[in-house]
Length: 344
Image (cartoon, rainbow, N blue to C red; front, side, top):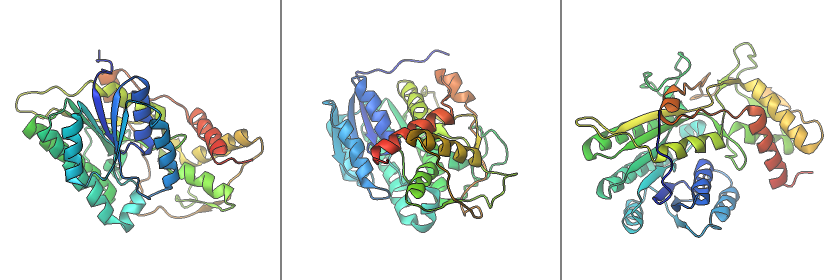
């Protein structure tokens, strides 16, 4: 199926631009000559120095404009839309993390529900060509059928984070139907890579090792029924988003111009194999053997035993399927980590 290449004459508004995926997407669009308006509140959910380091790289581009603000601030969002008149909006700002949502529910409602509502309202009053927004593989909950397909039943979330992401899909569908806003939701599957999120397991494992601490593995030491995760390298995620940007769902009479896509590696890895590959990647980067001290604990509330993406719908729409192996992806992360933190 043919798809339209990226239209670099458009103005892109990207929320969460100092975040992991937001940074890489903004950087790629800026390198192609696009005008990017970035919004981020630089919250302290994880090390803000990493967020500022990403921002500094984006500020090197003349066609980048940054607004420090929270998407739950409706007036700020409305003003940004009115002033910059974006053609395409990518909402990546969200409070992330499954376990954090159990301890801090208020933050998730503010960012993921109210914030996204504000984005939809801004698109309603300032019509855009395409709204792309982050959903999550967590909407599949404890789905036993694999691989996960976009048509699967997803009304049984097992965390508040997952519930907010499912809500985003419903809200986007409604606004698309009522106000003819072409919208695309993206269910990301365990994104990793250099300059990633320190709260993600692979990054946390590296931090723990160099702090001389053991890593915690939440599978109860059950190697037979080890956790499976569809780890997806950040460059693959960004490639998928970029290809979708200039290809909004078609507007049809009496039907919402709204679609949802999985973006995952379509190749789940056992968590223990992933950990072994990370140990090897760090060993290569340092030139000495790295082996984590491991503590096994039961699965945490809100965690799911497996994530596995079907990418058939994405491939049919934009002729793309993520393909970076964990060996290549984790080596790039390990090399970056050792250099960034100046580890000898």
